[in-house]
Amino acid sequence: MRRVTEAPGLAPAVGPFSQAVAANGFVFVTGQLPAGPGGLDNQPADFEAQVRRTLENLRSVLEEAGSGLEHVVKCNGYLTAPEQLEPYNQVYAEFFGEHRPARTTVCVSLWGVALEIDCVAVQASRVQANGTGGRQ
Image 1: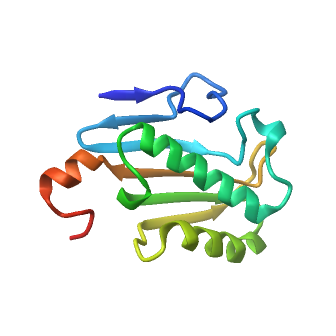
Image 2: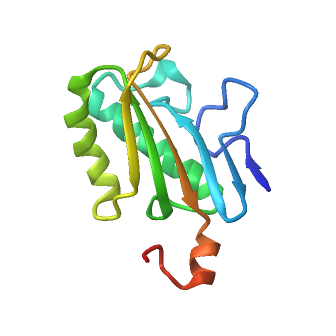
Image 3: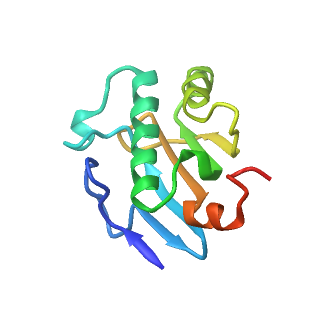
């Protein structure tokens, strides 16, 4: 088992947890926020930019853990208002394209942010060893 406690270029974790844990060929990524390297004080004002920043943070953690967006099998998105779903879907599609991992998206109350995204991915070395290229 490998723990990613601090991915390069991201704000450090704000609690006693890892940003990701790689175990048994999978990477489990903690919920990512639209925080910049300086923390939540550095999040974009515009919602679509917040989604982009959050997905960029997710990508950085995945890469540090030996995976990538193309190996994501499940995403969970947490939004704070129903009207965010359409712009969320538009930006999400820019990052995932036709890959289309399984996904759950819900509206919740969050602390000082408009969204949070977590995911489960396959480690890149596992995909290469199976020769599937991420597709079955």
